[in-house]
Image 1: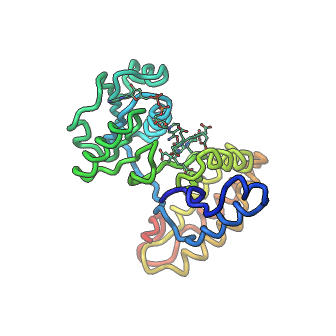
Image 2: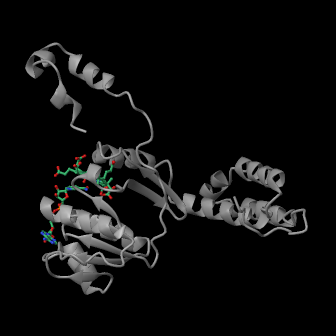
Image 3: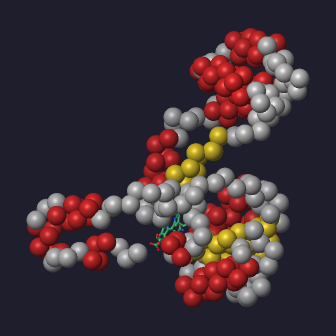
Length: 258
Ligand SMILES: C[C@@]1(CC(=O)O)c2cc3[nH]c(cc4nc(cc5[nH]c(cc(n2)[C@H]1CCC(=O)O)[C@@](C)(CC(=O)O)[C@@H]5CCC(=O)O)C(CC(=O)O)=C4CCC(=O)O)c(CCC(=O)O)c3CC(=O)O
Ligand SMILES: NC(=O)C1=CN([C@@H]2O[C@H](COP(=O)(O)OP(=O)(O)OC[C@H]3O[C@@H](n4cnc5c(N)ncnc54)[C@H](O)[C@@H]3O)[C@@H](O)[C@H]2O)C=CC1
């Protein structure tokens, strides 16, 4: 879709004098609030991901993919230092040449991240023909997915996306959340996860499982974690594990199937 202001019906300079008219026009064009992207958390561990392009954007994508355990191949004649270092350390495979059709074979995902729009389009075409999902970093609306700004604390993952509208805003939103979700959240989430794993029952015990969630949520473990109240935490954990022999023939220690 073309940017709405390109279709602004009156002379732009006149409208700017008439303060408020442009914003109002743009707001009026905002009629569809439905979800444009379907959010998922993808397990890329040991999966092949091909990044075409070796610039700053490719480096950002590669770092996050490697952190998530992907096997990254970068196809590019030149690499920024950060990528060159990762290649020298053997953390990713570098094909030091321009993109060639066939480079996406076996990939789960592809990133078209060169500064050459026609190359990015070729990458997208190959991806489409192979059924590989592709992110066109410079032309998000033509691709299959976009990547959000990320805050991660252990198993806690918070992401922000503006559906391509303002990546800078996504980043600022995450920066605002960072102090609220401090590093200690990694510990709290881990404790809650382990306790939940221990206490949940097999299928058919929904009411019991819901009670367990309610108890866990009410515990405010994070306050204790943050204040370093390890004794209080131990007491809670011991109490939970005593009462952890959940009712039912299947017993406890099972993951929630839902
Ligand atoms: C579609 C998408 C691509 C995709 O999905 O790969 C995309 C596209 C584009 N970004 C552009 C510019 C900037 N990108 C950033 C930063 C980030 N960009 C990221 C994602 C995305 N950027 C996806 C949509 C995300 C969403 O919907 O919100 C972040 C969140 C995560 C990540 O990179 O993985 C990462 C935060 C890094 C961090 O958290 O550390 C900054 C700010 C900065 O660098 O500080 C700027 C300058 C300020 C600005 O423009 O806002 C341009 C214009 C290029 C040009 O002008 O030439 C395009 C192309 C276009 O818009 O056409
Ligand atoms: N998604 C995002 O967050 C952002 C996207 N962009 C856009 O993304 C694109 C890439 O940005 P940067 O990484 O900053 O670019 P860059 O100019 O730093 O890097 C471009 C890379 O593409 C490689 N390349 C060029 N032709 C190639 C080919 N035929 N085959 C393989 N590799 C090739 C170059 O060797 C270089 O490594 C630009 O179009 C830019 O406008 C820019 C900023 C942010």
